[in-house]
Image: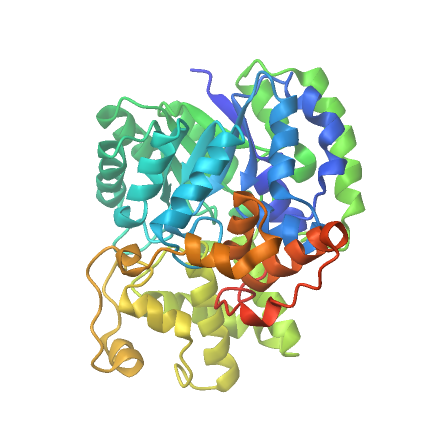
Length: 460
């Protein structure tokens, strides 16, 4: 069977390899060529692209989406949404989530891939409901990891929960490249036997497994795979499209692919300062389970503390902290939660002498239900007699739209501006002030009035 291909070059490819620093002007004149390759879809938005646009590139992320959509006539647009976290690092109330999804649909998004770091279905229910309400194709993603609780039955059961809530397709999201070929075969085969919807596989080649995993998944009946152009493939990105097109006779236009390759090698070279240069295989990740993006963040944190030489200690600590927290998959935001706490444990010389607010909130259930059993001693030390919530975390959140609209004032002329303000705190305010300063000639003295916990905790 010939699988369809979703190209990830403009989202996960560049996010994995150049920290999401590709400017719209660097790819806009290639979009019509992309559109003639024969991809089913292109992942072009979501993930860290929105954050990077406003924080580093001084670009309007919504305008970027409009430009992409206007050029792709034959190819669907796709994005990545972090469930109730939207594109940020905390849970947002339902009114913010609905407005974001509504505006995304209005800007022409075709497919929305939705995942939750903990695979907690409660954190996905509203995202699925709103996405279907506004007419987008919904793909339910399973965050893949390895642990005593994450087995075949776990993922088949979670897939059923997604299907029961109406997703149009399923994606196995293997963010750290941990999925072994044999396990991929068994998982895809089980999903195909039980569910009559497309099954897509998304992996990263960090450990060198991804291409073999894709071969096994295709053999088991996978409907689609995620690939990137070779300049933005391999390492912590997806496998390259070129060898798959030849091996499986995918029917993609090789002429246009090679022309795109020539262009994007030049783009990659333009970003040598941000280039992660993680193109070699790192088999240690099979043990540590640390995704490439998390690894680069750990290195950055240690450099800021002049403690790069302690990286190996932190890498040894990460699996221990993950076990203590009940084996959360290491993907945003849990990867940051585990990574920061692991770094603190090593640098202070005593485990959990300092416990971050994020870990405390995780233990309280504010991010969702831990997949496995949490360390009881850690729970007692962090929370004392505080109770753990057993309901959907977002049920505790008050609506934010109207209060934020009043508070933001002149810098949120549109709903899109308002979403930037709510989702990205000080970084959003700074971007919006600069955007409207020349137009309105107003001194926007509101940065200090906006107190946002998530404003700059986790850099892209």
